[in-house]
Length: 182
Image (cartoon, rainbow, N blue to C red):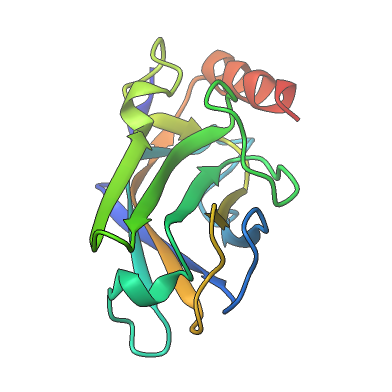
């Protein structure tokens, strides 16, 4: 089992989707975890929750009508393996969290959908949190069904995490599971 070495803290990262980005074109940012991960000491990151925030650049407002050119969505995923700027299927073991901002311009409706939480997809035998032994997280976002509007759109992941110490067996099990998805 994982033994907490720190209290919870927050990691944040933003990916900026340029104005006029076409539907299906992904943009990616990385989060460096190398300061928290240690193979010899069995140190890993336990992710308890991930929230996604969508904002229009440069005002950082949330006027969703201006974020996209028409009806559609902005999809986002956080993974612990580099999937090459691609979104992954929900059964991919590297998927930490995912969500979408769904925009219906015609009816002036927007809904924020977080469809995968770390606490229900991590290796449940080890923890109720998603345990990461890789030294980088990948934040990928893309417009779907529409083009980004006239302004850039920033998608920010706010990650509640803690540093945990794993037994050698648990650390190896997570590392093997993680690399199997590569």
